[in-house]
Amino acid sequence: MKKLCNSLCLLIAVVYLCFLGGCTGAKMYGAAKFVSTPPGAEVINLKDDTNMGMTPVLVTWEGEEEKPEYVTVEFRKTGYREKITSFYVNKRHKTREEAATAPQPISVELEKRKN
Image 1 (cartoon, helix red, strand yellow):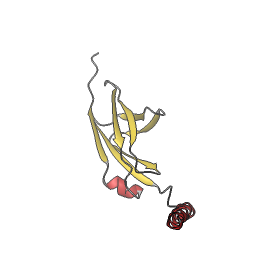
Image 2 (cartoon, one colour; image 1 turned 90 degrees about the horizontal axis):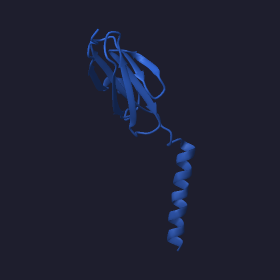
Image 3 (cartoon, one colour; image 1 turned 180 degrees about the vertical axis):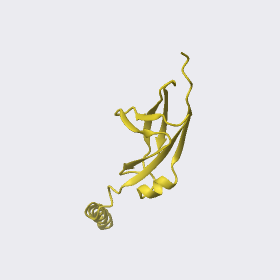
């Protein structure tokens, strides 16, 4: 019984120190490089309708876990059909710069509209 109590007290102390020491909530980063053919397409995040830039564009995500995030984007360019694609971005890098050196490649080929 004494051994169980000691183990439980040790576990509680470790959890308490983690919260005080900030071992939860470490920022992690992931990145994707969007490329389209032809270039110059807008990349729209369909989760919140934000414009992420024009292709080619590098986008980074920040999170507190290494858990992948599901992302759906739409590519738009005048004279071409819109294209939607989804993917998981892995937040596994410790810095934004590190994530930018190894982005996930996301490439699409846009179809010309028939007039």
